[in-house]
Length: 165
Image 1 (cartoon, one colour):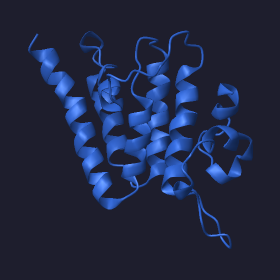
Image 2: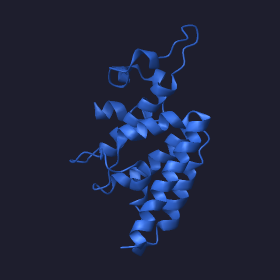
Image 3: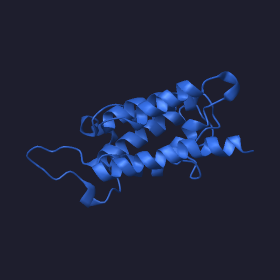
Image 4: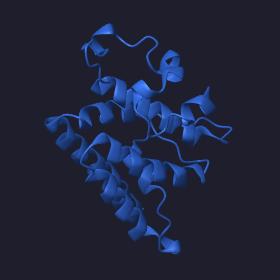
């Protein structure tokens, strides 16, 4: 199932019917696409598809779950910073690219690179259901602004805590 999900990374949810049994199962009917003449994935369908395919990428090769209800995506990204390695600026640039994305496809592209980095450290995990809710919100103007603020707070909050240990 995870391999099947990974093959859907970066694709339109409607281009991947082999994933529908996973991505659409148990979704509330009011979140399904409605326009029969020209159906397009809804914001919910995009968010769930994106979160699940990125989860499958992150989980690949990990024996422990990469879902951690106690940590947000931004906090997980921040945990990639290793002060001794001098990688803080490159992680910050990656975060900036994610947070300033114009649309979900762009955000997904940049998040994929970050998740590939997290994958190399099996102890980094984050709350994927919350990530899916954030991706959903990101697709609306007010939600995009709120999500950016939450992620910015999460990314920099960890830094403040690290500096005051």
